[in-house]
Length: 135
Image (cartoon, rainbow, N blue to C red; front, side, top):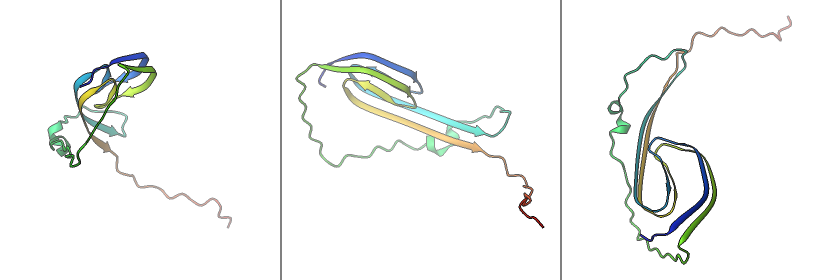
């Protein structure tokens, strides 16, 4: 892997979370894995619920990585040994993501999220009277 020097004037990120990376400089391998269960309820109280990843098929399936069937021919010319970056402003880096300045030999990022929404059953609605009826 060709090595260069990364120069960053400034970088600001409000949040880096859940198996994410902010990488300045060269790295040979980045491997991120984030698993999450998001539960949304329409309720004023939240009781503790015993939820496990292995209860859901999405977390049991193997990671599918498609094979490249086409040959990739690359050619690079880097006469300047520096990677120069000005100002970077980032709101957030989350759920197995990478912001990188520099060379990365290999990156494998995986994020699986199971969303659960518990919606209460509709109650019997009362009909609305038509106020435009002038009889």
